[in-house]
Length: 413
Image 1 (cartoon, one colour):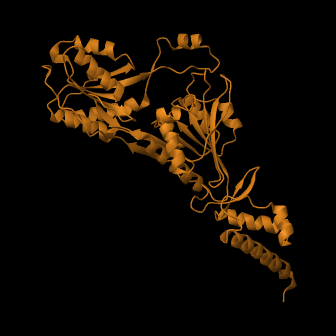
Image 2 (image 1 turned 60 degrees about the vertical axis):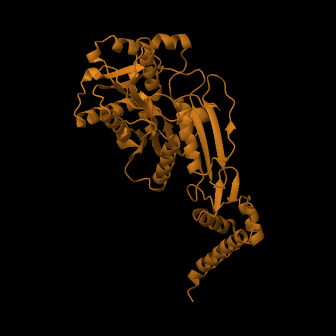
Image 3 (image 1 turned 45 degrees about the horizontal axis):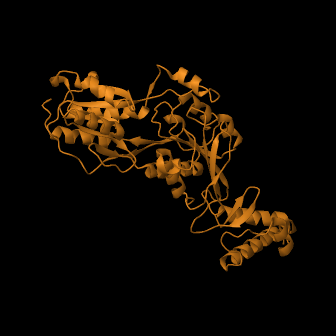
């Protein structure tokens, strides 16, 4: 017998024995699901082996997803029905909002629906959130921690007083995240700085082709639904179908600015919602396919809540130049236009996007925020498991709502 191989063989036998003992105790329920295991020193003493042997055995069990390690807390028996997000590793994942995170916004905002979809996908949705107390100038935070999934998910939003529409980058760095998902942040310069951190990142709800090669992205794809709306309007005899996109207020350049300084900075400035450009493209191509004119003069961009002034301008045009239909960036715009036409004894067809069930005169083009969250959550896990793969761009399709009113002649065609 080669005596040089004896110590290695002995160490291997000890490792296998420790591995089998711990595995058997988990299988027979002595170490139950969610239970905190004895420390490495305690196991070493109880099983009469060296600590390195225990560490090696626990490492193998962690890679198999049988146990999970929580940094600074200990080692737990995993829930095999709900395995760790990344076997063998405890993750700390940041969800970065474009606004302050508040309890009601988890259930009333599009970002809240995306967040709930992410938590649902990862099996963390039943975990009670922990809300951080912060001052008006500190980033807003809420955290979910799951021992079974070996993950902590933290939403980091801008402070209550900030109007930058992204969280403080230094706070992001200080949180020491393993991976990131941004939600509806469209400040490209800030996103470039974030990507420089070299963390696995999914950018959600910002359909920028410039950033697409650098990170995974999930966007809301309105091509099919907007085209369907236009085809249906054209089938009802409408010819002058206009497009209404959304102007947005320009974000403040600094979180330290006072409300008065922010208003002064924003005066006379605006930016177009990036999603409006995608929907504009769908409008243009569908109009062309229907054999209808789509001149630049039929494409408009307006701030929300200014539909009355916008409608007044169009209704002041000669009847043969007035629109008989609209596809809008947002369902609220479409509803507002229907109301303005109705005030003047006229009717018009309009459609727009919404992420909540609605009733009214306008056609809803439906966005499922939960599905956007599901897509983002799965894309991030895929990136964590295959870090070298190329960046991917995934569109979550909208759908045209089933309830669609019938056009009534306005004498404008």
